[in-house]
Length: 391
Image 1 (cartoon, one colour):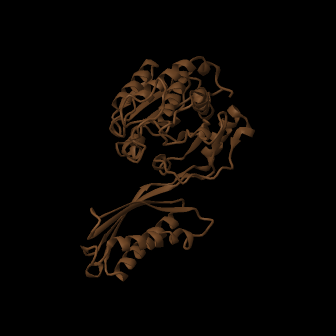
Image 2 (tube, helix red, strand yellow):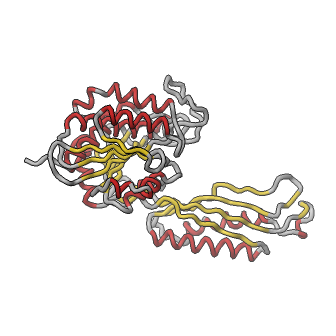
Image 3 (cartoon, helix red, strand yellow):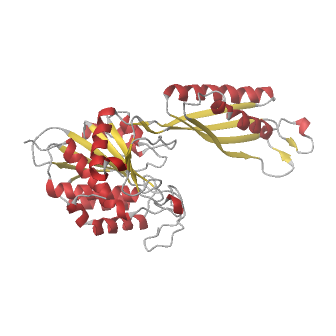
C-alpha cells in the first residue's frame, strides 16, 4: 500500500490512538472523552480548534503555507454503537454494552493522522477544515452540526468523507459515481382492533391477524410495484402485541425501515404503504395509523469531486485496485446531509476481514490498523491535490 513516507513514520502513534479510542467507545452525543482527545491532538499539532457544534463535534482549521481563499472540509465520525463487544484483544471496550463496531475509531484516527502531517508540511494553498462529527449512528450528528452553523462558520467549496469497507481487500478503494448509500426512512404502524378472549375471537377484532396481513402485503410494494431496476427495500423489523397466551390484544405495533435511492420511489412507497395499511385494516374491521419518518437522505457524490477523489485514490493504490464498478449500499449514512448542501465525495477504503465475520456492526468487528497510513495518506494527498500550491 503506497503511503506518504512521513505518515508511515508515525503509524505506531496512530495505532495507539486508534486502540485507545476503541477501548473507550462513546454513544451518540456522549463523545466527551473522544472529543477531548481529538481537540487535544489538534491543538498539539498547532491547528485551531472549535468545539461544541452538534453538541460534541470538533472542527480543526488549518491554513496552508501559500495564499488563496479556497477551503474544503474533511469529515470523520466519532460515535460508537450499543453493542457488547465479543473480541478478546488488549484494547477491547472497557465500556459495557458499547463498542466501536463500525470503525469510527479508525476514521477519527486516519483524519488525525492527516491533520498531523498537513500541519507539519502545510504544502497547500487555502484552508482545510477537519470535521469530527458526533452521532452518525442513527442520531443525525451531521444535521446537528449543520444546524449549529457548521458551513456558515466554516464555508467550504467541497466536503469529503471516507468509510472503511470490510468486504474490500486492504490496499483497495472504491469511489462511486452518484449514489453511494441509500435514503433510510423509519415506519411505525399501530393497528387497533378489539380485545377479546382468545377462545372467543369472533367477539373481538384481532390486530395480530391484521398485522400479519400488512407484513405480507407490504412486501409486494417492492416485489410487484417497484421497477426491478430501481433498488428499494421495505423491512418490517419488530412486531409487538399482547402479553399472555389466552387474550387477544386490542393493539399491535410494527416498526421497520424503507430504503431507496430516488425521491420519486421514496414518495411512491410512502403513499402506497399508507393506502395498504389503512385499507387492509378497514377491510378486516380494524383501524391502523402509519407514522412515516424521513430519515437520512441519499448519500450522493457530485461529479467533479468524484473525479478528484478517484484520481487521488488511483495515485495511492493504483488504477487496478480502485473499484468504480461496485453497486451502492442499501445502508445509510448521515454524510448525505452534508452532500445535499455541499458538493463532495464519499469513498470506501478496503480493510478486509469479512471472511472472518469481521463485518460492520458485528460484535467481533475490529478496525484493521494496517490501513491507517493509507487512509491518512488519502486525506493528505486529497488536500494537496485539491488545494495545490501556486507555482
